[in-house]
Image 1 (cartoon, rainbow, N blue to C red):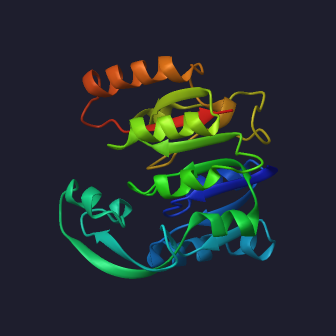
Image 2 (tube, rainbow, N blue to C red):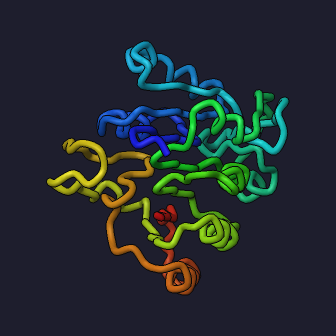
Length: 237
């Protein structure tokens, strides 16, 4: 595991990447949408030139080749290569053909990161399964909650993750970083828009065990979700 490296899988326009860089980490940003990648390269030209940031304009898939990215015409951040996920979203989608690689190629090129943020609209399983049978794991992983959240949590548990949190992303604008940094260096930061927010031991709330988390998350996601809420699951070793 490389202590100063973060993977931003599903980088969108780079707000999470910006935060990780500001915290002093090196970043590999992975984004399938070519338009977002163009924005990332313009926004972070200095960080790319200095070697602190690598950008991969690829979809993560089971096999290398080409993938059909279904681009949401209502909100481009909902773009996905999973047709089932696209059917749950409002508005029309158009198909954009993009290069695709399996996630093991990313690991072979860059190594195991300290933290992996994975938000690729229903395709998170294509990332997590490649952490199996590795000599080391990221200390922390976060995934977006979707219909597969229970199976993905079980997969994380099988990999060796024993601590979990459910974080309501709709409240991130209220999140404050601790004055004594627990991850990377201390910075003053306000979270905005569709970001994943703090990670690791700077996330809000207490870590709980896998079995307790499964019960809690099932109850919460079934009965207590508001119309504006969306969630990430954070897992730690």
